[in-house]
Length: 314
Image (cartoon, rainbow, N blue to C red; front, top):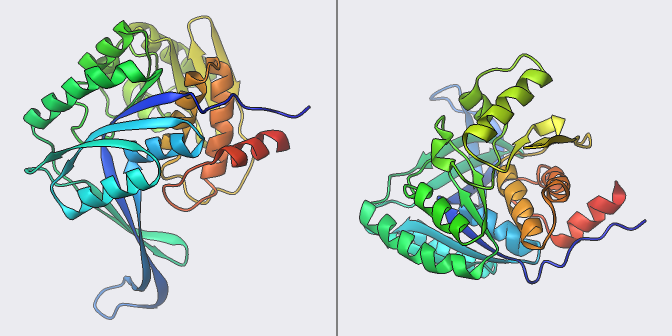
């Protein structure tokens, strides 16, 4: 039987969080430097892509839904590039400019299709700009079904507790891509989507599957979450809800690049939920989307036709 997807054209998702500009320098490596035992990369082309919360929004649009993006950038060339790239991909971007803030840039040097080096440039935004962003958030949640809070620990979600409360008071689904070891700030959200390393940082190491379930459910109860969606790389995903645990295995495949895979997962999850799907169905589709995107280089997107083809192949 042919698998179908919900219509995404009426799905509206608001993405708030840390944005960054992902820069790629591609080149050939043919020798080792005489100055130090490091490869010499002769750069042949460069590329820029929206990263962080901007990549989440870009994935939503690629699926055929509507995405609004709310974040902070610096008054610099990288911030201008991010705004241009986001809007060119069909994202409705509201990027508050902070003159004292430098837009986060991740520069990756790629040689022979392998990442050789990553260089990060970042500072923290000011409280005044973040307060202005919070006021706009209150207005923006009226025009969405789902809110995604993409936390990369860069300071753009200082008011996340207030954002969760405001969105939930208006009946919105709130998904959080978490960061750090303090999840108390995510209390009351609909779901959080940590990977294994991120969850381990919060609940500690688990001995076996039973121990993992106990720890995950205890955290879910403590934070008053509807669900925790644990992404487990080659082991697939596990959804922890109040009355059940659902595991979705992944199909064995060659992994090319995992950067940005978490963005694709939460973007697909949010788009499915905004289209009326249940959490388990949304997880299963997000799992397939993650399987597609890890086969692509760098921060990439999954299109609706790719996802349909993948679902019908399995």
